[in-house]
Length: 437
Image (cartoon, rainbow, N blue to C red; front, side, top):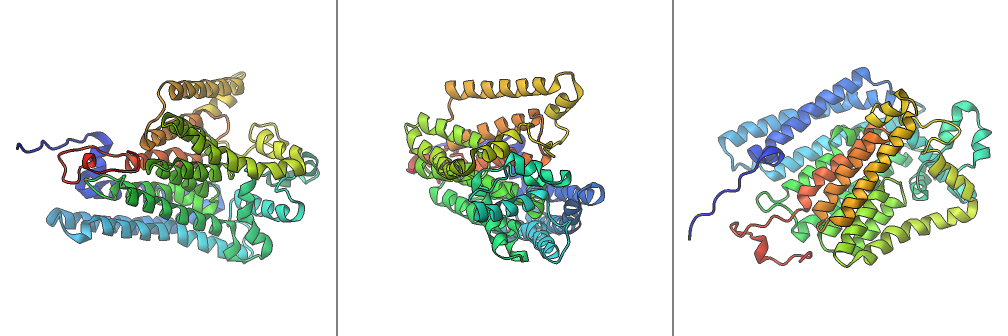
């Protein structure tokens, strides 16, 4: 027998594995510390500055810890202090310092009377929960919003699916720091990510050359990456949606299309951002002759959630979920990040029509791609979601910087979903039966 030639990695895969993954960890934490510091000094939003003042120290502490791990790795590459379990521990501490601590601090100060310790979406979700209890619908009608003072009309809109109102129910029951919607966003996100990581590990869809390393990178992208940590600590409504989408992709990788449809259906019942992911997963399921099983949950759950609201107040639903995001509401959406689509819409004659046209063209191109080359693996589906949403966010006339957490997380999660095939490695994937075949 001849010795197997080593597999050469280039680009991001090579950097991701350099020094046992510690080189990428160090870059992540050091760059994140710089981002948090700049946020503290320059952000126009009080909750963001408050987050940055705490998160900067957390990222710096993680940077110091990883630097020590690198020094240990150079002298003793096999040391447990430089291994994967210790990297997980540092990630957990970084998440506690950059997400949990600032979130709890801001929630406590808000409960004590500070009005500048939460982003607008927190208030909107909590109010939608109160309205759900009182009226049976989380939405205000067009006339009800028009009757509000101009300064309050923006907060009168709830541009989410009805399921999001559930996170506002605890605050509707009692006004404390622990009933802050962010606390429940965080609990749902953490529970879902733990389930996703456990599912990946049990399904054996991780990289056999570094078991669990891909899972760790995906968890870092969904929690510790500044765009995720900042969002969860100050607003947070996107993180449960993202976590459920990652769980859906994970279940797809484990060969469970029905459960994948349920997970993405739950996400779609919270926010429209999950709907493109649902479409991609349905196409993935169809390519594997299980499209109906995915579709049942992906379409059925949002429909079950929407139907009662349609019966209670259809016009209010359309006003909040469709007209307002499309720029047809009484007030403009605050999502005005300077991405190309927004710059085109505001700087050129008929720019909004041009931006919408480009967005539709991209959507058509993705649809054609899915029709001719449907993703046959969960990793491929995650990449389609990541790159597709990235391009769409850049071209949308109204978008937020924080929405980038979706494509970044999908792209980071994809390697954990892949099934490397190597007959040369002692843990050969060709000698194991997995749920996908």
